[in-house]
Amino acid sequence: SSELTQDPAVSVALGQTVRITCQGDRLRTNFASWYQQKPGQAPILVIYGKNIRPSGIPDRFSGSDSGNTASLTITWARAEDEADYYCNSRDSSGNHWVFGGGTRLTVL
Amino acid sequence: QVQLVQSGAEVKKPGASVKVSCKASGYTFTDYFMHWVRQAPGQGLEWMGWINPNSGGTSSAQKFQGRVTMTRDTSISTAYMELSRVRSDDTAVYYCARQSISDDSYGYSYYFDHWGQGTLVTVSS
Image (cartoon, rainbow over all chains, first blue to last red; front, side, top):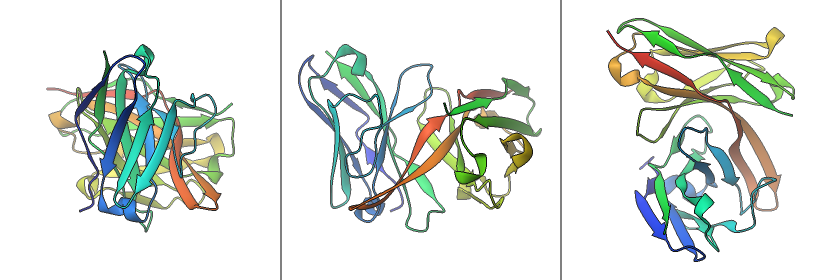
């Protein structure tokens, strides 16, 4: 399959750890990148490659991968982490890209 | 600093075409692929395609082939996305996003490191 599958919604208690996953065959050979989107805003990049955080992204955000699954982990969850999270990856030719369906994270 | 500034909101009738622009600044425009991504109201992100600003080469999602045209004007560092024969389900916010490449001991990674602010396109009769 060329798709990326994410759980539609996940919740986490304030200060706890949450893992958001993304599954797809193309992840066996291509890294995922992860984007955070808050209502009314453009997405921002939070993780790419083998667990690389862009400048300005807190180290509470981390990434990992195993087989056909990429994961975004948020430790010490804060209220400001409440957002939609999307994974993305390209195919091996670089011609076609796809986003996961997105995971809505609620911080309780 | 890198900036991607998109054109303003559009309202179109079904069957018309819409053209969205994305003006880049703060970097060499021809060094990075530009992608287009859209988001329908209350829905997720949907990848539409990319343009290589250096060569003008493009690739688009099968869903949009035949309806989307991506072009660029390197003299003004601007990328364009034109969608033809629009329908009500094309109502969405359209984003441009710069694609970067990183290379380390684990291999290459590809990602969107800068995004435009989005352009709302409304299709309504």
